[in-house]
Length: 165
Image 1: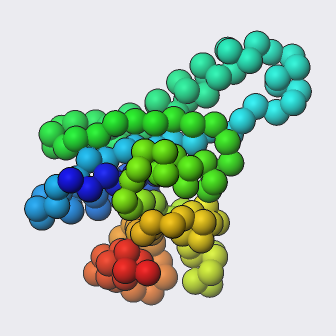
Image 2: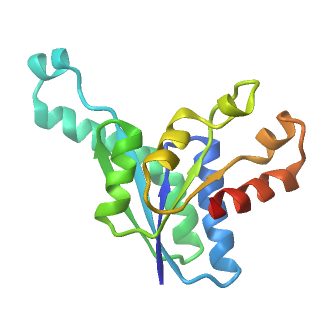
Image 3: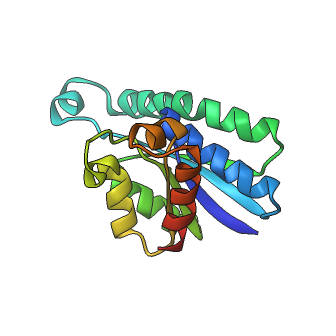
């Protein structure tokens, strides 16, 4: 059984990555998913003026709320999964989380909306792909594919191509 991390930030693009993973399972892949969310660490001012345990609890609660739709989709489909919420810089934390869970692949949505292809792929997605030693599939929403001048099939083709890099 493959262990695949799906980065979820609550955006439509991250839910598209979840749906992509579900589609892989529906097509016969035996997989267990790690739903990963990274919250930014507290600022120095926050740490000095507030209780650090309270800040950490609020971060975990925020992450739990953001991954709830993804968890609901996987649970409704009966797909094996677990959740990990971490604090830190998103790109490096996601790669570290994938390594600590011994994942064999990462699925991540893209939220960048720039006019050129380099801006189209979001900075976190691009950095995760750069830093990771395991395959990373960058998943666009159908709307993103259409906005770039393609069609819904282009988004699926991009998903397949990025997983082969």
